[in-house]
Image (cartoon, rainbow, N blue to C red):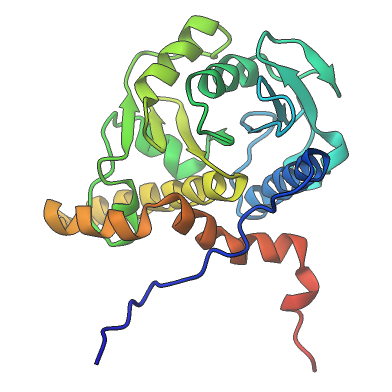
Length: 258
């Protein structure tokens, strides 16, 4: 009898191919929904944080949240379109840090369609330790050998050189812990990048709780590497985000009949 893969799935519903304008609409819709998703999970704070998505038509442009717009109320029409040289070509002004970080990440990583940065509670607390996540549970193994710690002293990131150094440190990885600052995740789709952000915040919380209680056991490297090959892929990151996105984009499907 053939063994059953417990995490087998069919990624048939990946972002639709088709006319560029339709793909732009899809990108903006999912990016705006992503802000509402993060807000629902308490991962926003004031005006800090930003999530960007590369424009499908203009690859040296990205969509990002306008400065001060509440994440929980974000709509596709609220998003601002920004050129890599800093010009806002559509929409309202943006956070200077959003440009400094996201322009450099998108410039350095043509494979990245979306980048998410924020200051969630547990991620910010863990970032103060200046060390990577440990393999103390199966889920966090998605980041094994695929995240970095940017350990330079940081203030407000409004300098392009600092954004460039973050992009260099990130290299080909999916995530970075910015010491004394917060978290940064990237993905080949909006959904993938959002899932890594949610998972990284959750992983920081779990590690803080475990270490407060004692000395957690670690999963051996070989096993962690095997898990990463299964649950740390772009397809699986996208797939993991689908239930979260469905709660935002199709809330009626979650209603129960009396």
